[in-house]
Length: 234
Figure 1 (tube, one colour):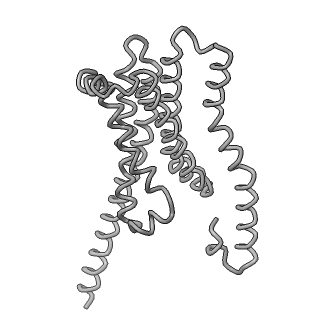
Figure 2 (cartoon, helix red, strand yellow):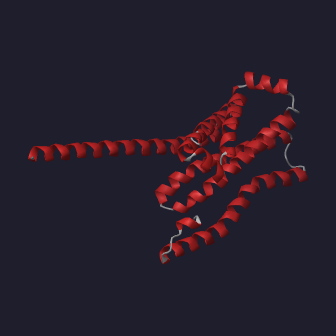
């Protein structure tokens, strides 16, 4: 909770104190947990236990965690609203940046370890292999979101323009899930689980928008009826 929102009342000061204590405890834990997949890959690599195709293993795991953390980022708002735990919003930026971090590792693994920076080969892949096209699109959509994740970027862009820009996260998540579905050729159960979770998260947002529009229409109709009744009484 920012200091300027604390106010001078005892209740506000108590809320700020609780918020600071929670952040001091949970943020390091969340940060550490988000690094566990990377540390696991490092340990497996040092032991020579990345399987018969280490590059494929690293590519798959970094991509999987990029998508997992991206969906976790999108889940913050619905969970916060449903549970009333407003403090969860403070972790959305961290999860989003870690999603981008793993997306960068995923892309670097492909560009460096798989393609050895062969631009011609990568361009052929993008054109001929649709799942790579979709994955590249998802990554490119995440870049401006990561670059504008700071408070200074919000001030420069303005709140409304910043929010409009960051709606690209929905497109990035859709592209990421499609990339995963198209990548898997045999057992698509895991990518379909991700697709289902994304559908629920996006469906919730659509429902909220429609509910707000309905409420506004109802309020407008009620105001019109009240004005008409007041005019009739005159």
